[in-house]
Amino acid sequence: MLVYIELFNDLDIDKKNNFMDHLKYISTDLVNSVLNFYLSKIAGDDYNTSFMSNKDFLGLLTIYNYSEEFLLNNEELNIIKSYIDKFYYLNKNYKNIEDINNYYKTKIEPSNKLVKQIFKGIFDTNRENVCENYAKIYLNLKNLVNDLSESTSKTEIETYKTHYYNLLKEILKDNTDSYLNTQEKKQIDNNEYDNFRKKLFMDNLKKDLNKEPPDFAGVVYLIDIIRKKLCYISPTNSKYNSIKEKINSILDIDYFKQLIKNNVFDNNVLLNIFNFIIEKIKEFQSEDEDKELNSWVQDIKTKYIDNFSNETLKTHLPILLDKIMSKIEKLELNVTNYRNKINNIK
Image (tube, rainbow, N blue to C red; front, side, top):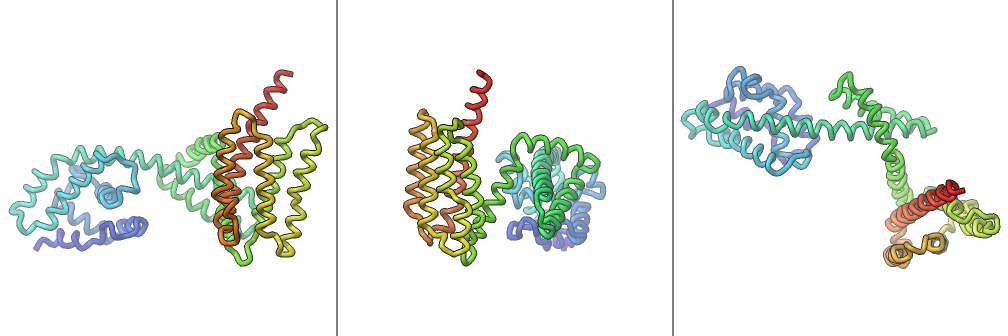
């Protein structure tokens, strides 16, 4: 019996494990000592130089079992799978292979250089992708810490932020801070933090609406933002002040808060609010977008407004608010651009 092959076969490296559990497992001393023993027998004592390192081989095994976690094409994946399959064939059939060294020399070694090149390319690509994702999370958490006033939440988020900084530090070493500075400029240009805040807010809104009774504070907060945006979008000339007055009257935030306090902020109130907002969007939309808007309104009414009830509130309300906010923000941008052009002409 070849002990080094049996020990390798006993390792718990296959697809049945969770990806994160797999990563923890392959970093253990047990796995690395067994792999060192195995590779030294298969590829020779100088395998780190002539073949590849423990770490790289474990990387290949990880790609083999968890290819969906990596950025690579089908050709690269097929080459890696064919390569690792030869090791698994050897491990399964070693008793029937007369000369294991010859098997390695003829079946595996000729592909070493190509596989190492492919692995390096995948590693470099995924390294960049991983760093970008870690940096995005770190910078969003950094901004969130600065925005929060509640100390408990700030402490918890600060811990997460430090964790992602340390992950980047392991990869980028002394280049970490300069890399983060570059990524921060990109995130500002791409409104990454705004998008992060919106997603975070909507996730919390869903949780609040699933409480018993539902917590409508986040809903009223968004309605207040919508109210302000509708006032901004409305004509600026003083003779149209009545439009703003009506918006503020219908979307009376203090009144809504009072209804919530008295536990009478119900579906009928919400439906009246949304129907009013949609009518205002239609009123403010430019004529050349009427067709698109009519389609959007019909979609909103069919999917969400007409079927609005206590049963659908928890699922429909966040989606409905998100769609309305997106539409109003687009309208707001158009109005801002139009006003800027008018002011430049003047």
